[in-house]
Amino acid sequence: MRISGKIFIIFAIIIFFIILISTVPLPTESYVTGTKIKLPEPRLEGEMSVEEALLKRRSIRDFLNKPIPLDFLSQILWAAQGITSESGGRTAPSAGALYPLEIYIQVRKVEELKEGVYHYNLKSHSLDLIKEGDFSSQLTKAGLSQEWIKDASLNLIVTADFSRTTRKYGERGIRYVYMEAGHCGQNIYLQTTVLGLGNVVIGAFNNEDVKNVLSIPKNHEPIYIIPIGVPS
Image (cartoon, rainbow, N blue to C red; front, side, top):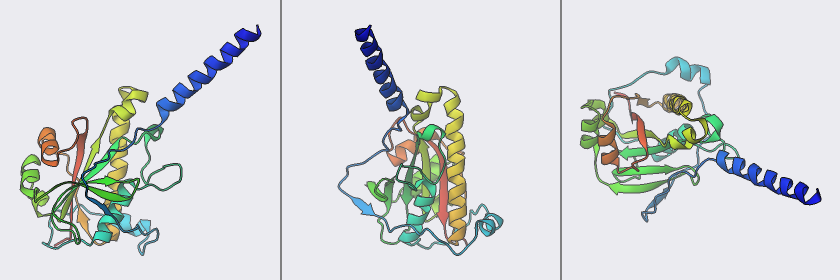
């Protein structure tokens, strides 16, 4: 009986660790391109209340041809998916804390940054350069020729690896991923409002064309293109 009891305990421990591992979020994407840009630390206090930001929030499609300061971009990325606790919690809630979202940016006019496509590395609050160049026209074409994509200082693209959530929740997890993207999108809206910038969320685009333009992994599906710039 003692041996059977020990076997039962060992079996229970193994099952516990299997369950534990299955609920740990997969690591975010990391790109080793040799170029990593450390972002300014985000501010944790602002001059505008949440209530005022909600009142002033609008979808903006007309932008001036002006660059955005790097610290503004840093703040927006932090608002979208920044880490806010030692346990890895983020600015937007996630079903099961599985965090399926990834953030990419296509830069046209940002101070101290070259034109190009970057991935937001939230663990180090930095940018990984994927490729250099102005891809505004290509992304606009992938976005069904919506001109505000081309006119924006940058485009923030929210993608999702659905498997991170569906491996636990099954088909229902698809809904949870879209809900999480909505939380993220609203954070971006409110943060750009506080910074005096404008943005609009876009859901109409060709998925495969967007993935090709940005050179993002095949298992990532774009959910939003978010043009951001200085309102005209």
